[in-house]
Image (cartoon, rainbow, N blue to C red; front, side, top):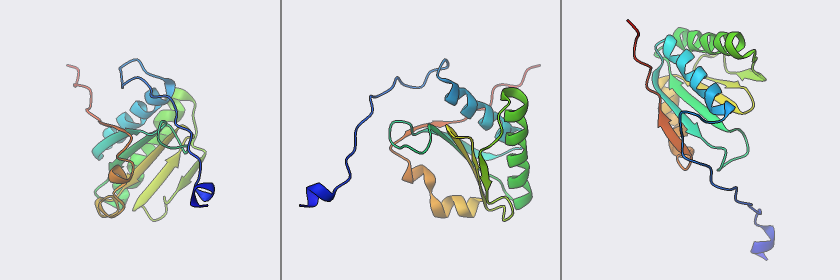
Length: 142
């Protein structure tokens, strides 16, 4: 009887490992991560979750040391994605509080969090079965 009540899960086909030439959602995630880095975000992580969930394809998770920095990071992401890709978020949650802001682009969700909120909610562990990639800023050009 319990088997009848259990949700059915249809596994998706495994995708290729991360490469420099990947799909558009990865490019969007990298652009968002770069915008976070522009405002000195702390510990920027990208997590590919398209094979393990249905909410989105990618998460970008980072921290800001203060509510002002969290908001500045969010503005940077919004401005960069609109300017370079013509994309506006579907919704933004938590901007007023500035402890955990979620910017939803559909195939990409950006989480900008205070260090305390990030430690408490520990999204990296929750989504740890996704494919993780630590963001490394491109080298500065002379």
